Image (cartoon, rainbow, N blue to C red):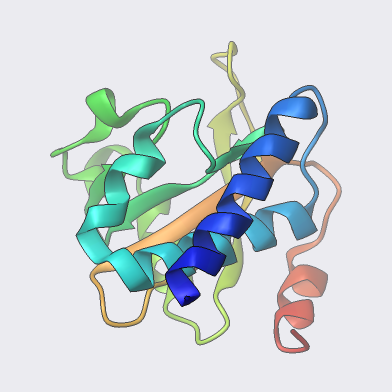
Length: 162
């Protein structure tokens, strides 16, 4: 029954996401998407990973998406760059991955700031992402948004209230 509920929620996210593809995701959207991904991976473990590689799948919502890391070094699922990132040690080329992994170990997850080019750009922009380690697995799930104004302190304080 629990698996059915998880897939029902995922289906609703997919339907909503495609209807509002031009909209910007909010921190609340990112949080909900990551929490849903957490539940799917906790239930299905490695069997859930292919769903996170689909650029038109249920883990792509508005202008955000979930990616999955096997911390601290490997990307195991990404809807737009798995071919580029899979089986590479990311610590050398993308040192902020370590920050995502460390932050994800917090019991409530954490919001992390780093700079990454927006789609279609080569210039890095400020990105804030929510990361959490999935208990009982080697995986950390992450999603984020580009935003120059939101403060991490307020976002992280809100996590202890959820």
